[in-house]
Length: 331
Image 1: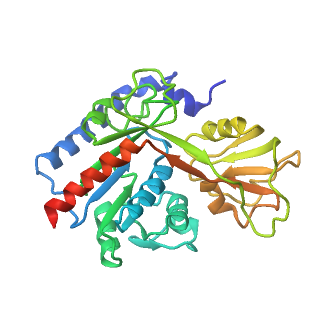
Image 2: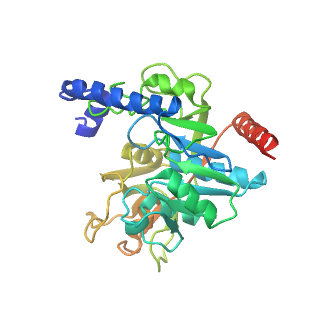
Image 3: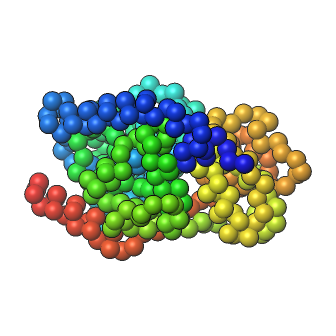
């Protein structure tokens, strides 16, 4: 039986009854975007190029792995990128610089993951323009990647990248709160790049000219300290996922030859003692996003699976060409 979240995403009863509120939400969102487009509201423009990665649906689509891949490729091309993120799940006083030893409860799980993996300055702030100013004032960054900021029009952007889950697509196509859409599907036509996470298995037509992103798992790593055993090579494992779409992680483990016992948690879940006490006593495997919050809670035989986003070379060449044009017109 489908969960409430799945029924909501796919348009199951009773959620279409909320459609009148959905149309009101869409009207307000469209009016706000139009106000910025016409100059009635002023967006702040940074002195460096700003790349915004986002989606038009609620829930995880793969923005964080794409952000990491983007930063890696930009550094290889000679840029000095920094990251600005919302900091969901944290309780910081904004704006705040994130370091690898920050607490996830303060800065949020995804920004902490980014700070540990990316090796570039990371700032959290729900007001993206303020966060970018803080980032630039305290670093030598010459480019900003804004993780999850497509609808934050107060920050002017030079490149927009929309990420779509290839398994779920746009779901029911209904606007919030009746369905998962933050903006109408037509919004995808206005972004600079469209990236589909995984093969297109969803109902409806695949977005035109979208690049396919593949998430490749790396070597399993221990969540806590003092783990002496090797990671399991197969068989049954307790699978923990507090992300936007937990079934994607469980399916990954199945493809790797494991038999996951699924334990889905809400996105950005704040883990507490006892959350990881499962029976029978099997190895525990979780996402990297969960692992940054569980180091002090995990038993010895607990592992996480880092993933790397792979994209076609023509995507990278087109992106770097756009940035080269920006540099040529601003030098």
